[in-house]
Amino acid sequence: DDDVRIAGYYHDIIWMPGALDLEERSAEYADRQLHEYRLPQEFRDTVYRLILATKHNGLRPADWKEAAIRDADLWTLGTDDWNKFEETQQQIRWEFRHVPDEVYNSNRLAMFKKMFPIQIFWTWTGAAREQQARNNLRRVGIDLGNA
Image (cartoon, rainbow, N blue to C red; front, side, top):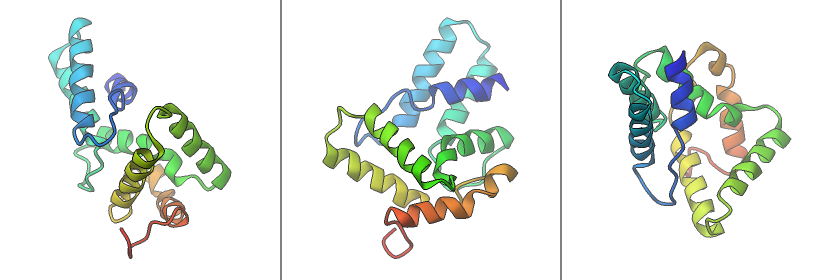
């Protein structure tokens, strides 16, 4: 659906090291932009809610749209191709090349630790990637012992 697609485009538009409200800031930015395009309030509200769903709090998604955007956001985490996983990590690092290594690595580790104890994928296609995602997290040093 268009609202899921638009939420996907905007969900990480705001990123600042150490900020705890990035999803909220991204949702607010998207809402302002969509308001300028005169999109209906209901559509904007759904986009806002879907962007907030990418916080990955471990709670069951409210609907299939939240499940879909969460899975899409973390899709590469469940790849069974380690080279592809590493390539994606390098691409993400390049996007944030302006962030010092210490800050970036600390934030990356915190995000991965947050992911380990919660359900990662929620759709039936994503469920097939759940175990591989955990294997990839273990491979980068995240496990229940230090999560």
